[in-house]
Amino acid sequence: MLHPYDTRLTAYKRRVQRQKGFKVRITLSFIGIISDPTPWIIEHPGGNGQDPIETHPNFRDFAGSPSSPLNGAKFDSTSGEFIGFTDSTNSLCGVKSYIVPSVMVSATYYTHFIPDLGDVAKITSFPPISRPANVRNWLLLSQPYRQIGNLYQVTNQYLGSGEGGWNSRIY
Image 1 (tube, rainbow, N blue to C red):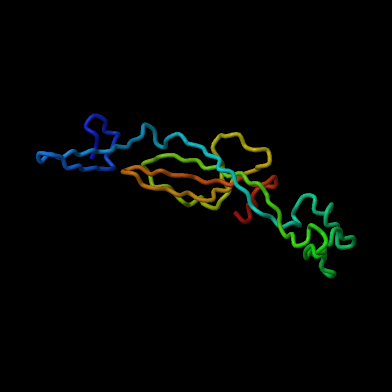
Image 2 (cartoon, rainbow, N blue to C red):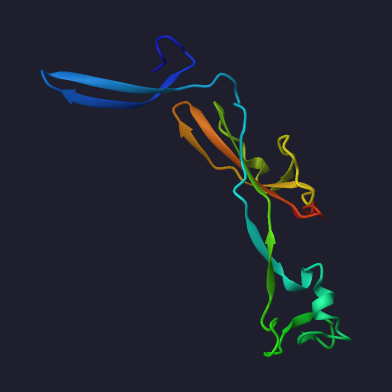
């Protein structure tokens, strides 16, 4: 049902209340947009992940190398691959990963069109916001949406890469 005074608005919710004297009050909620898509609403919820300890930029400083291990680091004698920190008297014993901050950004907008989910899990351009110095490019992680009347509320969820960028052979 269109709004009687502004046809850009469509009823999406109805509330019926019975009142005294056989009267009924009906309340309609309308939704509409002036531009399609609407301007984006940007959110930065923050985030973090874990990476293997051997990818830490200072790994050689605190673990050494296969020929000269430090702090109880153990390396495979054939391949040189890092196995772990095994000296129980060292504070690094058992450490396998480290926390890496990540840049997560959500961009929400409204549209009349069902979103195309074909770009999910692909490297993509991002709306004009200040890109953090350690983010080279963006990965569209997800694109959840919900229908409200004849509109769709769409949220693009992006994950910023590290300095090296997302691998285009994978994504």
